[in-house]
Image 1 (cartoon, helix red, strand yellow):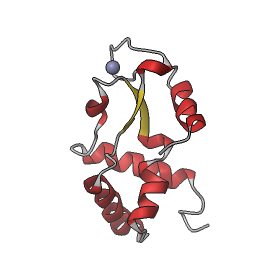
Image 2: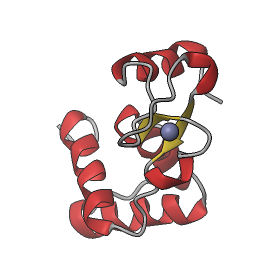
Image 3: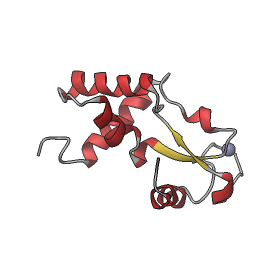
Image 4: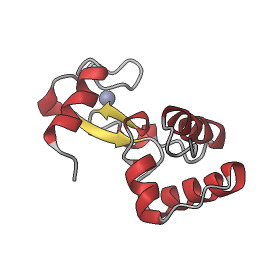
Amino acid sequence: MYDADYKYAIFQRDNFKCQFEGCTVCGCDNLELAHRISKGKIGQKYVKRYLLEKYTIDLSMREVFIFFINHKFNMVASCKKHNDYFNVLYNPEEANKIIDEIIKSNKRLRGE
Ligand SMILES: [Zn+2]
């Protein structure tokens, strides 16, 4: 699903450590990628609705997945145990912030 380089780049950004506060698990073999806005239908629909309401940007679910769900801003290095703790869907403020940051970083999405 992700190529190895992409995964490695995120691990590198996160210093090859689980990003859960206080967790000491580290090293590529012990880490996985956690999605902050979850990758399932609920997460995709959340992003789609927010983009439409705030930015009047209408993306397909596939585009939402590619441009937002799999964006590096939406991913963190995590150990197996903490993967679920990074889910921000129950914290809309945090979820919206991620979406806003992705929009800000992408001229094409801003229609420029
Ligand atoms: Zn951890």
